[in-house]
Amino acid sequence: MSSEFLQKPNRSLEDMFFYEQDRRIIEQRKKLQRMKETKENLAQVSGIHDDAVLEKLVALDIRPETLATLVGIPLIEIAWADGQMDAKERNKLFEYAEHAGLRKKGLDPKVMSSLVKDRPDPALLDGWMQYVRNLCKQLSSAEREALKEEVMADARSIAKAAGGILGFASISAEEKAMLDELESAFKP
Image (tube, rainbow, N blue to C red):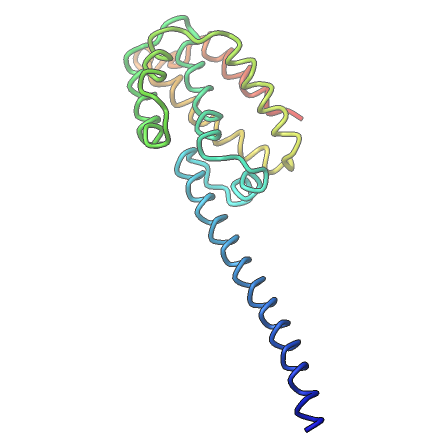
């Protein structure tokens, strides 16, 4: 009887130990699943596919909506760089917004329309520059470079959208200056 008495408390402690281990494993799986879903959402919204950058953005708790804005503002600034937004640039911006699923993520179409109708306040670019500089301080040089390449590739795409004449001067001097300014935000 005494051995049975001693075995019951040990069994309880053992059960508690395994219960705690199971709980930790389940929580870790849930965390990994949330990270995977968030990385997929971030990749879909931004077009960023570098796994290390996506993991870092998740670790910094950057939400897809924030990243869509982070990637979208340079596109708007490039489109307005020469003082007017060409119809091709406007179409390219709407393509980006649709691809990123911004409407599904709560971006009011009126906001997007106002950004293509009227040039944004310079404070928008200033805020973006500051945000990117602060974000880059938290990234490794490889992560920073990957983020810069992803964002700048889309910005160059918008700059080239207006065209040029027979493929020459497809990026205006104003757009080139804006590309340089945007790129400077990624410098350490």
